[in-house]
Image 1 (cartoon, rainbow over the protein chains, first blue to last red):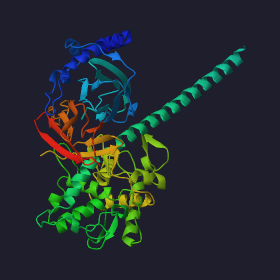
Image 2 (image 1 turned 30 degrees about the vertical axis):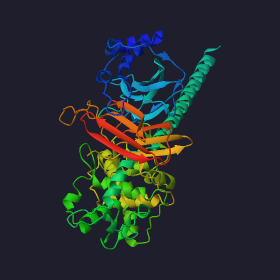
Image 3 (image 1 turned 90 degrees about the vertical axis):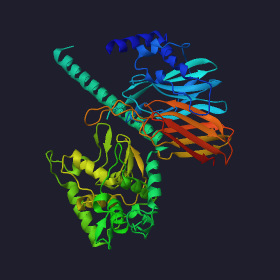
Image 4 (image 1 turned 90 degrees about the horizontal axis):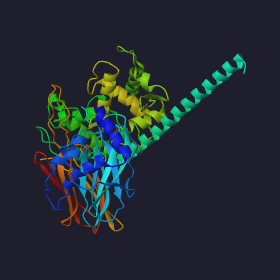
Length: 160
Length: 274
Length: 103
């Protein structure tokens, strides 16, 4: 576990965004919008570790963007079982917004497809196993962008 | 510097840095408190308790039990079927039952006496959990939601109520169990907390008001809507007291003590807690 | 039959704000029961929202979305009286669809 953490830290510091690059393997989730029963992207939601997501490498690396922001998202969650997260994308032609939680057993929590006419902002509540970085991954005009925020959790939210 | 002055200087320095550390700890604690308040605000809109309220409302109007009677015939103190404002005046003495009842015992009374449900069945699933639903919790959520914004107005005019209040107060201060705890141990003084949870002082108006008007609540850590009977039962468990029997005179007495102490505040439930 | 959702759809200017509260366990599949056995994962996988028949949001969820999920978003082009329909499907194939009228 320590090596993965050390590796994460190293990659983050380098700013290469390699790990996030890998996350965007989940880019495979975006299919042409159909009204109902879009196939659920199992491999994206099953990715357990940075290693696995890196293996599934599939899309351009996301660039950090100040146009992707967390709003009304507290820095501390009293209970990790319910953590309110609101993401707004000011990027034109935003197609999707995804929420990923670094230290969860599976990083990808949710993906929202935004059709034309819908505002590029979503609010939901997610479970966080422990204090962690939360990523907002946005696909806009065919490219990927990311923002992150650390949310501290006083009581982990996945255990019984 | 002489030895003496160095030592004094060292001591002064140590004292100053200790103050700085504790000041920064205090600043951090109040920052944390502010962020947690933000967290609670963010969750206030879209309280899962509303799901219980909707279920309870449907249940309230349904013909139920062997007698096929709906709760529209149930008198919570303001007349049969009158729900608006009823919770703000509970507990109260009910002549038809010959005792003081809180909302939960009154609901059980209506289930058994009006709907013909057996006492055993009425007590079957009092607290919901994985794979099991509590009807009582849904009914409580609905009934209390109809007192939202109503000022707490419990009356001790009836001698039975005075007696219950006195008993509740006595229980509140009664020390027992392996830790020699009383309710008052945690809730009898201003400014106490357990880790990051502030403990309301229930012996004084403002603490009692804040606490009582926010139960029942969707308890995030349980993922369930929890009622006052549950809250008291869980307190007893945390104090390592014997199990507090649902609807027991002790539980009603404590509820009477807390509800009356909360008089004058607008009821704010069902709420949301961690 | 899964429990109904609570949906609010309100017109604010030229935007409709939709807020949905869903009733679902959203079991992660990480927890163990009292006997030590894993409680199987059970969670909403897809959510689709339409307004007057036109898709306004679709989502794919994993079990990390909180129990009794809450969702809020806004879209343009809605009018008072339009029907907003929210449909979810979970990993067991169970489905729930509810609607609300834009107020």
